[in-house]
Length: 160
Image (cartoon, rainbow, N blue to C red; front, side, top):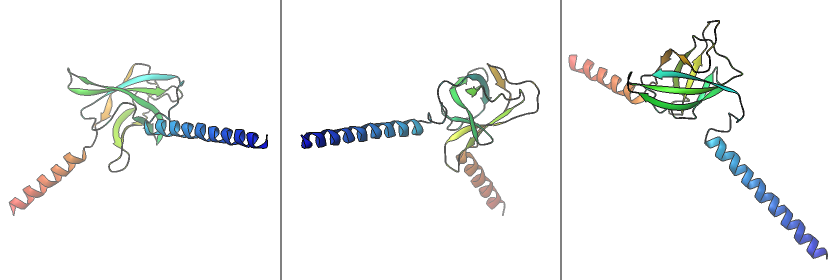
């Protein structure tokens, strides 16, 4: 009888360990997919912004203001009329931004993930659902900077 009780106790703890392990794996998967820091069920409003170059920006990338995640990139489309990338963002309704807010694509660290950075303006009116951010700054592409630097060095060297 005592042995049977020990077996059940052992089976219970093994099962508990497996359940905790699966929960930890699920948590890590959500974090790596960038889903963990922006929970479901938030009321949101949608805004768009057009950029000449979005670099490596991807859907579900963070939208940050002052380092705080205030939304997520919902979708990225190419506008054949303006030949620009249209980025649609779902913003947390708890953070209303002024209508003259500006957006730029930034990189976390030197070679990290890209995200949209917002700088709030001073307008009294707020961005509405379906609104548009007009002032944008495209991504700085490291390869372009390096090639411009090398080209300027080569030009400077050929003049001597």
